[in-house]
Length: 560
Image (cartoon, rainbow, N blue to C red):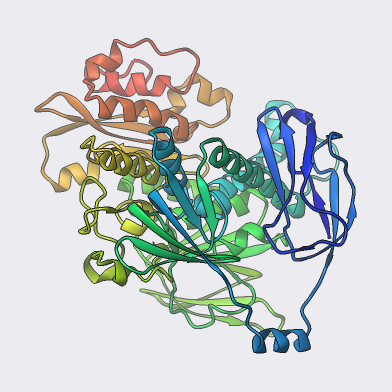
């Protein structure tokens, strides 16, 4: 197997630093092989497979480009005899004892951000991660899916290039292997960046499974064994894919949100089970790649966490794009046909139906991950029904010096929430007395077009009988959206009539993921409609829809 240099942006080159291995060395997955200096900092090159170094294809001090071959590893598979010997003779592992100011378990967007923030505030920090730095978000979640979203958008744009006066000669195809490789390059660059930040901030990183011994002590089991005693502990172990009891879910053509990110075989057809965030993002990804897509959703509408009118809008857009939507439908079983196709049986008010496709993607939720943590030995209390760790507004558990952040708390499963919770937890460890405020948390769904929301939505306001005014402005009235050929969608603002403050906003349309930051600032800082309308927005930009929607709360929008 060849180990290559990770991607360096802009076609630039790096310089090979210290090479840590020599020909004949035995390696395990994750072992450090070399350092490469780039304009953005040091990159660490690690073994991606176990084996023996057979060739070193680079030299210290030499320039190196993206994807250049660096090492050749002869992979070694353990024989049955080797396994037997290994089972019979268990080597003794020396346990290393450590003490630290702060121990953080989990290096996702909550854990690693908390670690950096704590280190910058003078704490001695130890960070434990059993898998990869960056956690689910960076490795098998937010970042990889957005890389696929971008590739699928480009595919869609190329197929529609004629609309913009661009002629594309010849057949346009999808090289799914290259799509996945690019996704991995982006991911690896970010993982290397986090690794660099850990070293820069002198954070001790330990690889292995953490388990509590008591409320102040944790063991870490990996290539080496550690016992870590800490003044304060933050649990940031994230979430895992929920197990769904559907007969046939273990069949080989069934994917989940993790395995789909490594699937280099682009199917001609796929059935997506679940019309939530993950399901709808993948539905548009596959459709833009030219795949025939069916979505089966148990509830009576898609994306039930957003306003019903936005849900209906994305439903219509999806159907117009050729995605087959089946709501109020319960999946009964998954079977394999004689020719190896997937047969999904679902039931609605009209009876049972069959959908046949090459692949099935199960996209039904995630749950807090407490696996192997022995949390009961810490004395930490769990939420009702044991789903996640119970915390207060300071992110503190019932045990004074133990905190929990991110998905493991089961409050809001969003990476940016985990990061902010981590900062709040550190502030409280430093006795700064901070509390989490969830009133202005932005949420983005990367469908086509994008959907974003923050604060209170219209359905929620009405259910609570709040005295509100609601404005709408369609993207069809925005010049920039028309130049982008993205006229579908609208923005909606919610104003509290008693305080005259903007308390909520939702967007479905071009650049929604970027526009939501402005609305978040407005809601967090309790802006009135006048404070928005008196602000000058650049033209032509999609941001002008915010100004128009604010105008619509008063005298009315100017361009509709």
